[in-house]
Image (cartoon, rainbow over all chains, first blue to last red; front, side):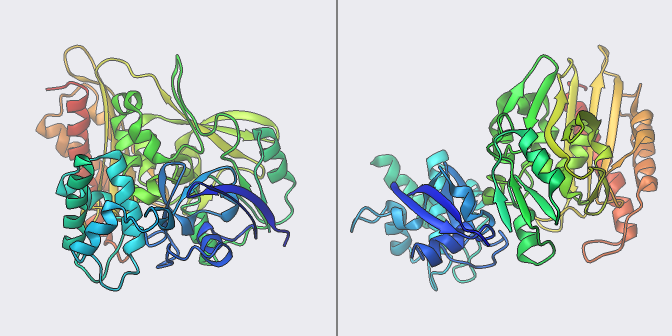
Amino acid sequence: MAGVAVSTTINGDAVEYLCQPDETLLEVLRDRLGLTGAKEGCGTGDCGACSVIVDGRLVCSCLVLGAEAEGRKVETIEGMAHGDQLHPLQQKFLEHAALQCGICTPGFLIAAKDLLAKNPSPTEEEIRFGLAGNLCRCTGYDKIVRAVQDAANVMKGA
Amino acid sequence: MRYIRPLSIEDAVGELAKAVGPAAILAGGSDLLVRMKGGFVEPELIVDIKRIGGLSDVTETAEGFRIGAAVPCAVLGENKALRKAWPGVVEAANLIGSKQVQGRCTITGNLCNASPAADSVPALVAAGAKAVVAGPSGKRTIAVETVPTGPGRTSLAKGEIVEAILLDKRPEHAGDAYLRFIPRTEMDIAVVSAGVNLTLDDKGAIKTARVALGAAAPTVLLVEEAGQVLVGSKLDEATMERLAKICSGACRPIDDKRGTIEFRRKVAGVLARRVAAIAYKRAGGK
């Protein structure tokens, strides 16, 4: 199979790669670019562990082909903190113990970031609805919801 | 396998028409990539239609709305004019999957995937939506209900692409709605569903009505008799009972893990009543 040459932007950096036509963006991120923050849970768009933002839209990177990223802007969990400075959502996830095994966490953080970008003051219901595409089998979700609420308050004050 | 990203619909049609092996059209990929992953399809050619001019736009025209085949459902929900004119179509489109899926999935894909349980399709059928089909011999505009012919099968010929969905401009006193039954509160596949689209006369009596059922037969059903029974009424109890009975009777459902034939028949009638009431209220009826 001939490779597809792709030029894209990932977390603000220009990136070029060659991928197979049937390779997903998740596979490209993890296996070709070493960006292993996005996780493969189900591989069928059900669990949200591979969530990334493409041109301002939250998507499952397992349901995007690597070739489709041509000319797009991709945001992954690796671009969330600024150096040692954690994003308020990351900080609040730690403070509220909103993670246990951690596999779902990058996806939740990206989905929560997208949620707060579009709705800076979500209600609890809006948070639960907005994060319903992300599955967590450890926390029972309550701590995640509280962390997002707390982060929203911090970010509004910032 | 080859991945191509044509810039014109003619090029896309040309590539599909001359493809020797299995070929697939990629818009949002929320069905295609899952099917590829599961080994249900192994396309030799993937035609990504997202860079074709106009296919990613919702345009308001003198005749109504044109929704490009690559427009994600999330964008429909963000379009105020569309939401105001066709709230039932938009609410149905926005029921498909999570936020992540909404950012990718399209109503054209939902139509062409040809699942009997497709959420946006009963709403589109009730709305009298049309599909613009581009193919090797030019373009044609067809009623959306003629696209799916059975589970996973469509009437589209080799080389044909649905490039847009058309919705009419709304007259005054018009409303549509969509509801589905699922065993949980969100993000599930319809056990049975219903879409209703009504226009009212100046006195609030129903002038035109279209009723469609989902997950109740091998394809989404347009129940013409159900529409006819509503015409002239203001949804009095006797009319509602007749509507429910006709809808239950029109079903040709299957027994499966999501519901039994008996359950689907009953719920089809219940949903039709509830959806008709919502559409009537949205149309300004009292």
